[in-house]
Image 1 (tube, rainbow, N blue to C red):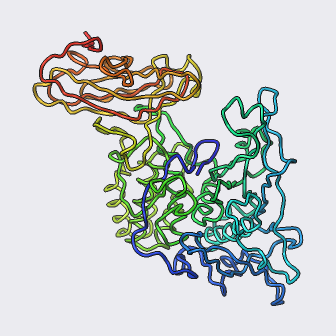
Image 2 (image 1 turned 135 degrees about the horizontal axis):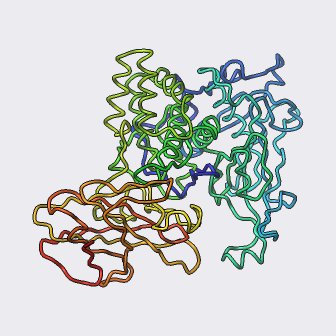
Length: 563
């Protein structure tokens, strides 16, 4: 889902397919027993040791029912657990490390105003889950109607699992970054004014929010809402899916909050373009710690599967750099998370998690994938040379140690790809207007074409679309034989043999193409490197790619020789 200031875990953007390897835990047990958090009724009253408060009166013990994992994995069965004692049970589920509110589909929430016009409203934040007369929350069950936008069970589920996550990070590893009541909102929906709904082609009234997100302090500006002192995690209700019912989603977003806003910014400029791998690593770590806390490699089996089974992320499926890169952070985060899951299996959960967390504390906004690998290996080396060797070997096998974002230009269709994620390029409007990069905004990935002996020309084709009303894609490529084009983000220049706009394909105007020959491709035996560029104002999305090698010189309006 999404960190709104930079990224979206959304269920739509990224999550990749799969069923878990191995068997699911039996209903009524926790996949976290023996590793990660514990939901054992006899132990979770302490929620990681020092996190809990409690009482000596059995009648006042704050018992409740939750899904240990999610409704799908738990086969619809809840488990009775003990909550960390709320500060004031009569006031709702606000405790030492979580303040959970229901975001009701009612008027009274913050107005959303744009261009001095009210366009809608945020839902109304209220504590609705209250203790019963016996001092427990056992009277609160999952609603009979799964589409209920205001159910109190979502609050109970969220409150319990946030404290479980806090107990894991603090109780096992001493992390105190989130030693405060983190705001958590459930059942988030947005209200759209009728006249605005007509303009955007949406039904008026309350709209489901198909997302879960860590929203930092300033991130509420995306909704035109006042900032919160500490940020928040927010979880939507969308159709029959309540995202707060999935513990792996809660742990994922909590990890984003733990990483915070001072580590792993979503994007960095480098010589090859816009490096999105810090953001991908942020997603990868969030997936990894969610999986280690549940002792189960699948993230979002319930919480995001409604967007398609290909969206669900299975860390036991190997991903490598650069072969599996897509340019999208949630999909590309699996390069790191699948490597860490293998490391965890090789050295043990406690040792792996401790090393990874210690390394993570040294990360900054500008930590690259290669630097992250070196920091983790160094932390492992300080403890055990053999373990360091395991870290180094597995990170190398996944390409984490170098992760050069250059992959082969091959025939490709987004609908047939594992992630079904289009290759996106930011537009000038997002990147600072026309003054920034007059040749076009560089993409996240570069590509290369292998030129067999005797090559006379190369035709590169793609289908592209642009976001926005009546917007046509304006794409280009920087080409350079033998070596990748390089980008200078200081003077916004690109070093290449040529920068060439992609043109409507003469055979099919739904495609854009260029045929490159002569100095454009250099020698007839080697590689041609290509950096995609977006010369338009809005994001461009490439959904299909093709390449043709010519052994005789072709002709046509899109032939370029760079003479």
